[in-house]
Length: 193
Image (tube, rainbow, N blue to C red; front, side, top):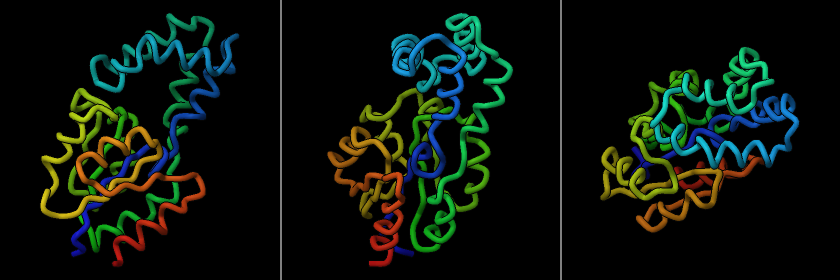
């Protein structure tokens, strides 16, 4: 077993972000993408990712905030928006040489199919809605640390720079996941050294 412990985000690393869902929502409103996202961020984002509200409450909020949307269709689009990315196909291989952990800002209900696919290969999953705190808040990294061996190196992969900085302060090595998947080769090199 390689000494390095690998901590992976889900959105933008193992699966797509919810861009397709947001694009569809925007197309059903008379607002710009930026306007829709700003309303979401100001009114409900924190509560959703921190598990302070149910998924059902999110759908109710969505319908009351944007009354002309086709809610049933959006509920179908959301799970279809979470597509596996290339990185997920390396998790099994990486688990043969490293302990794999998940650290993600998400709803477990939404990423369950992704997690189920890799569950045999991961040691733990720290999901923001379950632990009531989200990246980049340092508390979620400390919660994740409860599943890690602090005496061994930790390599964290995320697609957002602001989520890497708190990990770096803890002494974790980090790699910014890029859309061209160059990060996968970086992980392969780190785990083979």
